[in-house]
Length: 206
Image (cartoon, rainbow, N blue to C red; front, side, top):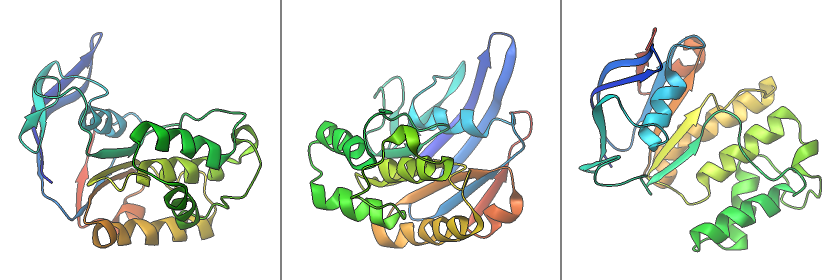
């Protein structure tokens, strides 16, 4: 599973949010992206998911250009910014809806995925009552649910306590071996990324 980003530039109004990004990412590795808030990390991940289209340049996944050959890559699972779930549903119910969309995920896989990220699948609490850390874990479960070959995680340890950070860090490090996937992960802390990534890129003003 290969990702190629060629001369990617994105302008929003008069603001240049990504400028001439060139990357070639191969399968089975963890790539870390570091930068302060507003540096372009989230925009780059949105670009790879097809959630924004370039002003110039392109993103190509497995030789298919996003926005030209495909609208959205079906090979990507993503946790970007605030996970969007139905506030009155439980974690399991929310993942069940995602599973029905993908049509190839049974209840056992939902249960296993929730436990993998440290959530109780039998918890009846609604998403609205989740803590920030629980919401982040459920977002990670949603990204992992279909066992995608490309996993994009935008600051996945955000809102977690030290124990939770350690658990998620170990999970992320195991993913390329467990699922033969490529992982892209971002953080504003270089020390955090260094503990997980095989290769690191630094973004500054796009």
